[in-house]
Image (cartoon, rainbow, N blue to C red; front, side):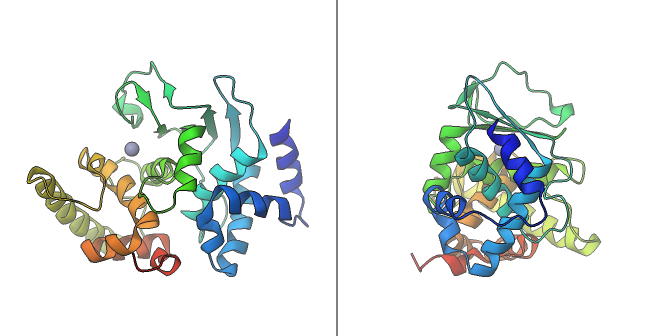
Length: 257
Ligand SMILES: [Zn+2]
């Protein structure tokens, strides 16, 4: 089984990231090629730990490939590139469907489920340590690095949000003053964003972010990584909170649009 092979390989100490995997990442995730060398090397380490600690399952007849596993892992790990230890300590499994999947799951908020859309969903993130993704959406989101839409960033942002308990649009932050600052900035921007939508104005963030503070954070994360310069111009204080949290400044990877 492909995943076991990858896991065995990554389990070895002397593991070196294969050239063919680098080629796969360059092909599937153009953002990877824009990262400075130092971040790419760091990302390889994180990917190794992610694959060694998270179970991947192909669902709905999907046969997992190295391609799929690496593409999901690389994007998930970019969000936690500066973390030590397990990239996502509470994450148990990633379930991958071939395409936008049909879920009969009821919305059960008490369990921390975050549903996307009505019946057909691009992805789901469960508080109990599961992420469900559709491979076609993952691949498309990875390939287009500047449309502001990336279901993998979105669902893993929800995972980060779950880590400190409630799915409330604030991830685990280092201390009270960081929470205060985050909460003030995100509340203000959320209110402004809803106001802009009501007035029918153009927004840099996708309107789905107006659904709840949790969706606002997930959509803001997609925008932060894919339209960083636009987000910075429009919402500089929110950009700054995200920059501090992720420890990255994606503006450096994009030309002035
Ligand atoms: Zn969401």
